[in-house]
Amino acid sequence: MALDHAILVSLAERSASGYDLARRFDKSIGFFWKATHQQIYKVLARMEAAGWLEATAVEEPGRPAKKVYALTADGRGELTRWTAEPTPTESVRSDFAVKVRGMQFGDRGAVIADIARQRDRHIDRLAYYEADCTKHFPEPERLTDGELPAYLVLRGGIRTEQTYIEWCDEMLDALGAPKPRSKR
Image 1: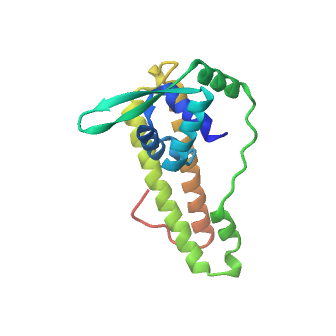
Image 2: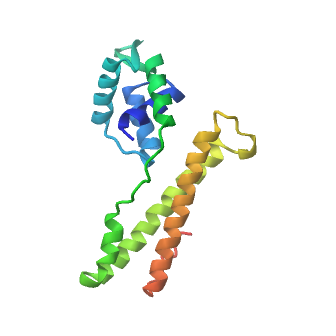
Image 3: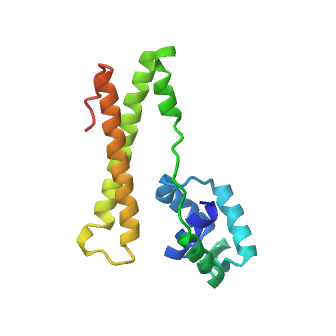
């Protein structure tokens, strides 16, 4: 997937300025697709030139006008074309897994401490996802067709975090290391 498609999906959900898109990436889409603010603005300009987006200047009191982007028919067409393509199997690239694999050749204690840190980070992210789910989807059985895709992606994030925490727990147990008592 290109950043273009992540932006198209976000703008299909709701028109936004470049700043608003960057904030969305920081708070939600960014958990699944990383992009810097600079990358987002660069892609927005390219997509606007390609005719996938149109920008409207919105005046703000005491500030320069901001561009608010919306999908064009061509942008919706590209999104339709892209969603119809089969997705390649994703491969996981993990510095952390390589570090654990190489533990016997390095600092075992530091790697065990890193496993505990990773566990804590994933517990924090799980808590964030669960709070988001409770806030935005309090009654999952009553979701509309428009709400269901975002809910399903959030559930995937929750399940991924749960699995990652379980893996860290398994590694700590196998290594005879205590799990931090503060969380979970």
